[in-house]
Length: 176
Image 1 (cartoon, one colour):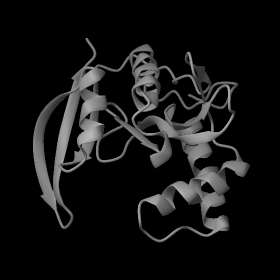
Image 2: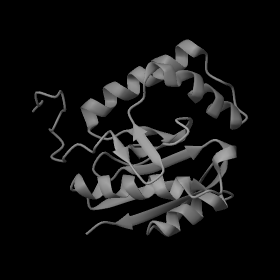
Image 3: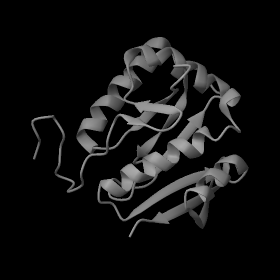
Image 4: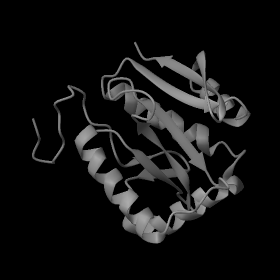
C-alpha cells in the first residue's frame, strides 16, 4: 500500500521522521546541494571520491529508497552554524528492513563533541516510533569511537564476522 505522501507501507512499519531537531542539531533529508559535502566526507575515508554526478545520483537514490522503505540516513547540520557535519540514520546495510542498522559518520573536525551521540539518540527514538523491535550496527573492530557512541545509546556487542577488510563487530539493541 502506498500512502498519499508516497510512502510504501507494505513492510508494516510506520515511516521514520525525516526532519528532526535536537538541542544543537538539525537532521534532515538529503538535498542535491549536499553532494558537495558528501564528496568531502567520503574523501576523509581515504578512498576514491565519487564524482559530483555520482554523488548527486546517490542522493537521488537515497531519497527514493527513503520513500520506499520508510527509513533513511539523514544529514546532520549544526543548528547555530548551519554547516553540514555528517549523517546518521537507519539503513538496511548488512541487515534487513525489519531489523535495520543505525549508521553514522561525521567529519573529523566534528568528532569528540558529542554530536554523534546526540544524533544517534534521536534516531533511536525514531526507530522505536516505527514499531521495530531490534536495531543492529556493524562496526570495524578498530573503531573505538563508534563503539563508545553505541554503548551510550544502549547497544551491546553480539558477535563478529570477518571479511577481506578484517573483523566486523555486530552490535544490537533490543527495543521491546
